[in-house]
Length: 332
Image 1 (tube, rainbow, N blue to C red):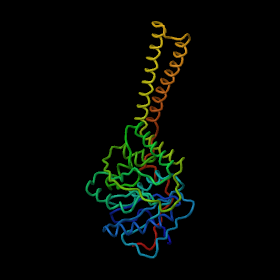
Image 2: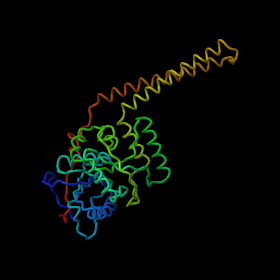
Image 3: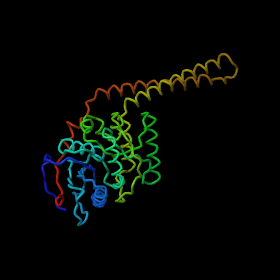
Image 4: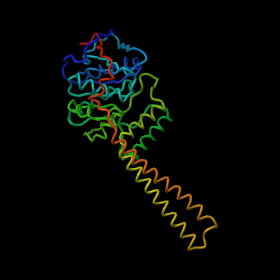
């Protein structure tokens, strides 16, 4: 399909906008677009599709066949200056909708097909029933190999342990148009979309869904990307994590100190101690106590440093990453 350049500030009707970040996902998108068109038409919905081209190595090439698009009234490609990653591409896409596209609500979904278009009507219906809430698709299963799923479960367990929050949802969501202003004021949106919304305490509603199958067999989420993704989510709760680790370290230091007292009492008041045993145990526990105390002090300073850093503000800074916008010809 040919592309024609268009200014991003053109007047557009309100309605549903679908934001879809993509990195070399043109084959998958060409399969996803007809499914979106069919689902929207069957449920009497109309939407515009905003594809966020996250610095792909290949230029956008979409081919969804000869059938005209009716429910998908428009498709735009938002080109970024360079690859910034899936989560930041979502933030920039939401900023573009906020600043340049009037809409009633925004759908965020991935381009690989694991966010099923068939689940979209249920999310939209839930969003209409709860117009103040951000509606997320909730699911626990993944389609990657077993080792990947094991580490993903480990990430979710660590997330709950370190932050005190449980996260069972990803990017697939519906954002009311009146919540975009709030999202654009969240500095954490730049690092992790779902965790930023969770931390913001904006109202959230979950809709159970099943994860779909990848339309393109290739996955851009490898082990390194998973670790980066997980650390980005956890870092948003730096304050909670710092407090929890500080309390744990202080508790460990107190336990070591108590153990030293017990070892000293056994050595002085009983005949159970082996010669040299109390000294070795005391030195070992003393090292643990000092390390635990050092960790607690370090976490306190890390937290204070985090609080004084200048934050990335999506409303102010996202525009610097946009190279241009193109509109796909042949839509109505």
